[in-house]
Image 1 (spheres, chains in turn green, purple):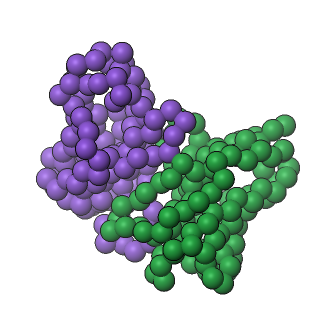
Image 2 (cartoon, helix red, strand yellow; image 1 turned 90 degrees about the vertical axis):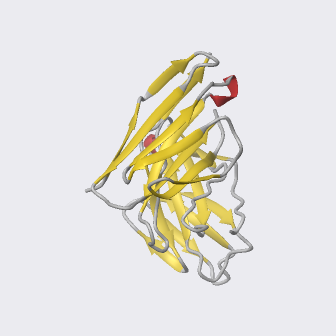
Image 3 (cartoon, each protein chain N blue to C red; image 1 turned 90 degrees about the horizontal axis):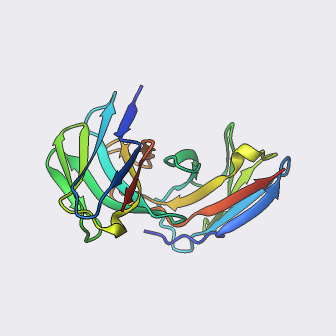
Length: 109
Length: 114
């Protein structure tokens, strides 16, 4: 299972675009990259998943370079309600999901 | 649609007392089931994982145990709680056998051992 590294915390202001990068140098050929969002006192929820290039949905975009050794979650025009912890997961080890410490995003007014 | 129920939402228990947290999933069959714990300000730690009735895998040695008496019911237990068992406990499920699937989480139980 690929080890992931992401910043512990980030600060932003309302209306800005936020990019959170996750490094996963040992990603396997079959591994997908998945991001989750966790609000305080709630369980994480799925945001977006991708394999290569770019994926976009109503919440975020996910950019994956050709070598797939990193990925960037992009949140357009964040608001205070986007304050949360964001987790990057790479691969699923026999249906087991391992979450690291995540990136704590603090959006300021 | 699928839903996951976890209760109670909060719990305060004295040291040495037993624990039973219950989780049920509706709207799906044969799910994979999980128990996670999150200490204050920390990431999620996978505690137990189950692929079927009576089939439990423990990820870390600890004071807790899990059971799956029915297909969509997952129970986390302890005979004697320790102070270090305090934390936010989350139950989750995923589709069995699906590649690149996602985990669906309950709302969690905040346990404080005093």
